[in-house]
Length: 159
Image 1 (spheres, rainbow, N blue to C red):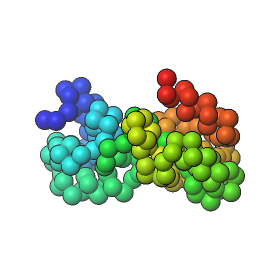
Image 2: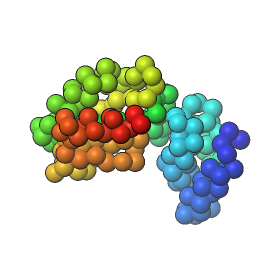
Image 3: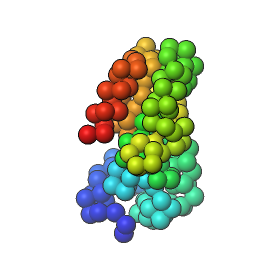
Image 4: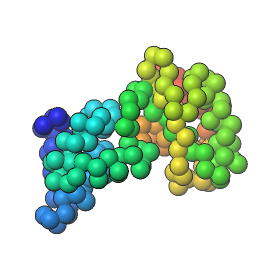
């Protein structure tokens, strides 16, 4: 058991939403819970989730590597996803991504030397009208991100 008792209780609540013979249906929630605790999903944690849900480890790995909300490699304290799909790209997303790369001194999939920030390209976040859009740690949506709003966000997160 690699996770805390509290995390397993959270996973149990997710499992309870499905029929008893379909525990694996809670895999996405279980991975999110594990990642919230560990910061990323190393192979042994994915194996633990697989064992807990009674499913093959490869099936858990397939889910974790398919969706970019899961971190299968260590990331910074703050993972900033910049939507680079066409609507966002045409509405300032490409500029916002370049601006953030220059500001942080890293490219996409890079982590700052101090371990504070990881920058990734994100898929559509469903907020095209609010482009450019960014997501912080898969939980906080940031809309209409101008250079000054990016500056303010980075400064806020550094505190």
